[in-house]
Image 1 (tube, rainbow, N blue to C red):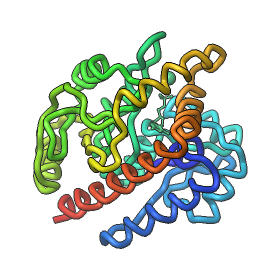
Image 2 (image 1 turned 180 degrees about the vertical axis):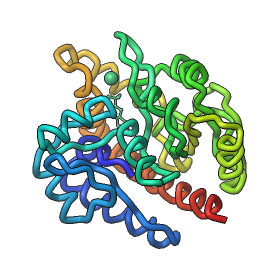
Image 3 (image 1 turned 90 degrees about the vertical axis):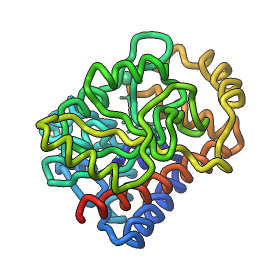
Length: 272
Ligand code: PSU
Ligand code: MN
């Protein structure tokens, strides 16, 4: 699991509760959780609850793959995004990880996440609820294709958009975790180095309509002139929670739980 969603994507103290809840889900599905993060320059795979508390209290920087050596050399504490988590997990021999949403091609001013480049280079299965609501879905899917990242929908043929449920953009549908594991095995045999992105829609009852989120985004986009780069997502998520009276927080947590559970099932299939 990655730590940016815990440290920067969710508010305190709910983030600590979510961390524990996700660990419970992993154990109850017969797997071993390993949350990745950097504590005062030390890369950790499998943060304990105490270490997660320390990480959050250290006011960590947000690091993708590019910034990892900076955090390590300067002994900073850092929360890892999808890109840096994929890189570290791969080094540690981990083949499956779960997140909330991946970064991609943003709407508006040029902003493309490192997540895509990393997933082009790293053989791992990433389970997410699709892309963040602020992404340009079409451009993100085109980039995923350009970078040879096979994107499969779990029980859906449409790319999901985080809490908003399904977009209208088609992806490759797969109906079982066994098949996802097999795709990964075949990918490796074919010498393809990129990741498999599993898009797992949020459970229907926790969806928040695109129109509702759009309404909030309109308000937020006006406030965001000084907010740039890595600050964009944390700021946005925080404001969405405030404007929706906590509804987006609840949905965010539910989709994380849902992704972690599917990641465990895929890991079990892969082991078989
Ligand atoms: N989507 C969310 N919450 C998050 C993220 C994505 O709903 O916290 C994080 C993930 O760690 C993802 C990162 O890898 O944001 C992408 O950030 P950027 O767009 O700055 O590359
Ligand atoms: Mn960016």
